[in-house]
Image (tube, rainbow over all chains, first blue to last red; front, top):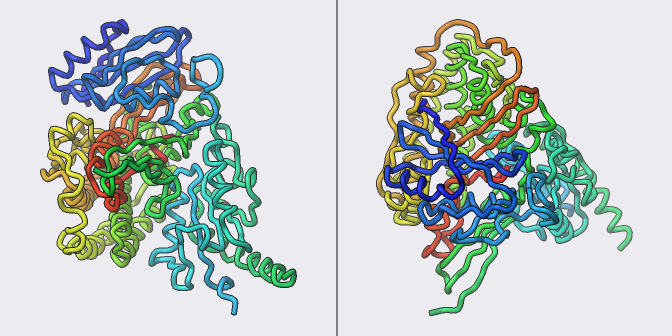
Length: 117
Length: 144
Length: 359
C-alpha cells in the first residue's frame, strides 16, 4: 500500500499546492469533509502512483475557499456536492450548479449554514 | 376473459434501495425463475401496469414520483412493497433523509420481507397480489 | 442550427433500474450539454455512524450498494483494521479475495445483461443473467446469501469455505467459463452490437486522465490504473496485469469488462490453489482511534473509504467516494455531441451505480 501523508496547510495555499501536484502528474482521488468543532475539515486526496497525499485544512462557516476546478477540472462535482451538503463556501467552480445538483428537500444535518436550504 | 389474473404487467420503481432488491426483482424475470413464461412482463409504462413493485424506502425527494406513478396506473391496481426498506425503512430508517416505508405515501397491499428479498419471496408476493387484483376487478365490475 | 430543447431523462426510465436524473440540452437530435441532478436515493447513511457503533456499521456499509455489497463491507473493515493495527489471518485474506472476485464476476455479468437489454438484444440479456445465477449459487452455498452476504467482519471473515467446496467451485467455474465464452463472442463479434457501440462516446487517454476517470472506463482509454496492483488482501500474492484497451469507445469498455470476467476466473483459481490453512478471524479488542484512507478496486473502479475514529464505540466519520461518482465528469463530457438515441447505451457503459453514488 502506498504511504499516506497528511499535509496540514492553510486554505489560501490550496491552489499553489494543487498546481504543484498537478505538475508532478498526481491524480485527484477525492475531496472529503468531516464536521469538526469549528467548521468543516477538508481533505483533498491525491494519488501519484507511489504516494498518497492529503491536503488538509479547516473551513469555517464564513471562509471563502477557492475552487481547484481551474487545475483539476473534475473537482467541480466534489465541490458542488460539498457546497450543497456541507455548506462550505467554495467560489469559482466551473460549472457551478448553484445548489441544484442534489435534489434533497431537507437540509442536511452536517450543513454548517444557518437556515433552510 | 380475465387476462390480468394470470399475466399481470409489472411496474418497478426503485425508491431508495441499495440495489439488492432491484437485482432480485430483475432476477425473477430471467431464466432461472422466469416469470415471463406466465406472461408477467416488466413494463416501463405506468399506464400499462397492474402491479406496482416498489423497492427501497421513501424520502422527501421520491415522494412525489411514487405518488405520481401510483396515480398514473389504471384501476384496479395493487402495490407490493419489496424488502424491509420498503416496509419500514429497515436499516436506513434512522437516516435523516428517509421518511420510512412505502405505506407512508400510498396504500400497500402486500409486504415482501427480506434484506435483500429473495426471488422466491418476491414471486410469492406477486402471486398474493394477483388474488387481491382479482377481488378488486370483481368489485369494480359489480359497481359498473 | 436548430432550436435548443431540454429533455429530462429519468428518474424513472425503462433502461435504468435506478433513478438518476439528467437534463439533456439538445439541438435537434444532438446532445449539447448534460446537467446531472442526483439525490433520489440519497439516504445520508454516512451520518448513521452516529447511531450505529463501528461493529454494527459493517452491516450498513454492506448496504451502500447491493451489487458490490461484499466489497463495501470489505473496504470498511479494512479501514477499521488499519486504524486498529489488526492483521487478519492469511486464510481470511484469500477468502475475501475469492468473494471479491466472485462479486466482480456477478457484477460484470449483470452489466453485460443490462447492456444487451439497452441494445434491444433480449436473448443475450437473458443468457448473461442465466449464467450469472451460477455465481449466485456459489454465493448461496458459501455464505447463504445471494446478494448481501454479511460474511466480512472486522478482524476477518465469518465463514470458511472447506476444501471440498473449493474444489466444487473450481468445477462450476470451468463450466461457467465455457458457456460464458460463447456469449462473449456474440458481444465482441456480432455486427449489431458492433454497430451500436463502436466509435460511440470516445474518451481519449488524455481526456480520461483530465476528467479523473477510474476503473474499466479509464482502462478502456488506455490508462493503467487498477487498485488491485497495490496488493491489498491477497492480491499481492497473485499474478495479474490490468486489462487495457486504447479505443476509449463503448466497444472498448465492453471488451475490457469481458476480459476482466476471464481475469477474475483466473484470479479465483489462483486463490484456490494458494489458499493456506488456518484461522479465519482474529479477536478485535477495544475501540479504534485515528484515521485511514482505504482504496480498492470495485467492479466499477477505484473506491475510497475514509474512516475517522475517536476512540469511542462511535466513529466520527465514514466517507465513501464511489467509482460512479468519479466517472460522472467523464460521462458528461462523452455525452456532448452524441445522438439522443445513443444516450441510454452511453450512460450504461460507465456501469452507473447510483445507489453507491448518492449514499
